Length: 258
Image (cartoon, rainbow, N blue to C red; front, side, top):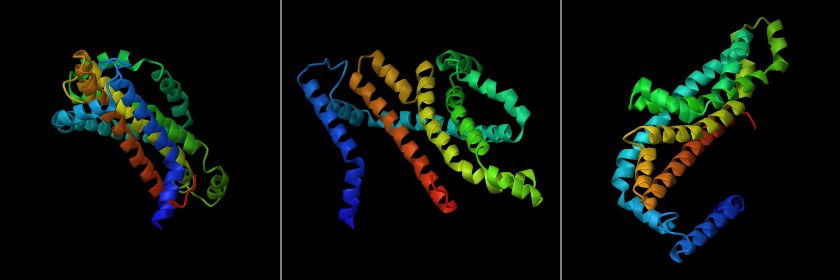
């Protein structure tokens, strides 16, 4: 059994793991041979050492701050995005009024809006949450709307003839087939949340991995800066995989196949 799982793991992830190992080996060799200045591209071992040396700040202060911003912004994005996507699906005037505004909102550079949020909320947690929300809101709305819009057409007329109301049709025949599309939006959204939190911390903040990386970059402490970037990447991967596991559990429980 163990050999079977090992063989399956190597088949699925072996090429990726090999590529990562080769990249790290080449990177380490180039840094040790001084082909690239250390302040531009530090060695992986130097980044790891810097992360261990700064672990109290990184893991005790800055990582929890970024995680809090990400989770709050994601929760708001999910709640508002699902409600708005469902409302656009159920009421045509809402769709016609709001869909263009949603698209327009995504054409405005986020960096241009961040100072506005700082003016409104100050250098507080909520200015970063607002940036995260604006970054992650759109995929949830579109995932919800597209999933509901393309589902349930086969059984809708049948349920109408049986006397079902609009809520029953939505719950029975439209929401279950829409779940894969919704989770696709959620997986995009959670990754965008990390990006939004980093941008918010870069533009104004005193805590968080984005703030820490900006401060280290200003001091030319590249190893510490790369350590913060590495943790941001790991945070995004862990959150993405968490949503993916939740998706797998819910879809299997409902008997839905992608």
